[in-house]
Image (tube, rainbow, N blue to C red; front, side, top):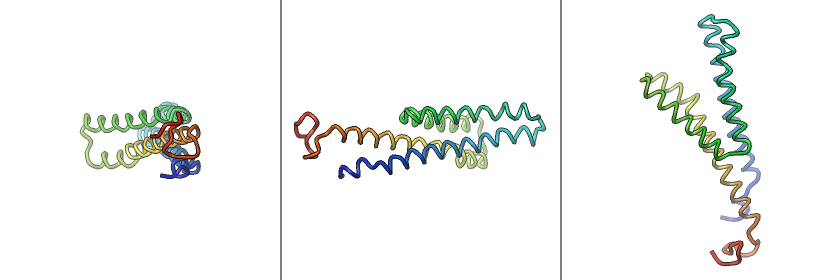
Length: 147
């Protein structure tokens, strides 16, 4: 693989942007759903609906803050969250429709964002490694010995 293919800043930024977009889109969906459920269906009132919407908002903000600087940690947290949702579904015996809905709007976006954060982190590590390697022979290590 060529040096430019290993360290492509546009691709790195696209992976980061897409990962953050998945987190934001999923967060917005769950914030709206958590607010609308109690407010419109249970007629619980605005205060209770806002209280319920704070949890997905906090989770979204936490994922974005962690992912901004610690992309590998964000990938692990998002993947663990997706695994937790699967465990939640198994424990409560969800029916097919619930599995489908949760897979489309929660599990898949979390896994995709996790993979994108991991890819961005790996590419940034490769870019840093390339920045310290000598520019001549790609088989030379930074110590001057052959790979």
